[in-house]
Length: 128
Image (cartoon, rainbow, N blue to C red):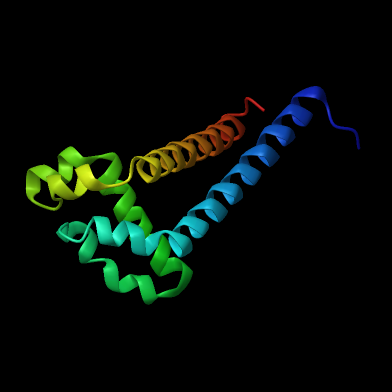
């Protein structure tokens, strides 16, 4: 059985997307295990983060859950500042390089998920 050009492109995009998602997961786990204490020290007055802090000892899934909470507070602070879930002083003192890494990580994750759902939708609609 031979693959057509469209099938080869679909396969390449799918493999790159899967590889990207695994890379994002590896980077998130690396950040969760190496920078978690630093992030928690800078966000110690944020109830939205500190309520999840006990999950730090919950293995990889707990650390990813805590990292996702930190990512939410750092990348969308208006939501948390409005309801009192974050402290403005803590967000100002948060290291800029970590904020940039978390923002890029979140956008990359959404991008890879968007591509994956787009491929699934194209397949379901019979476009591929």
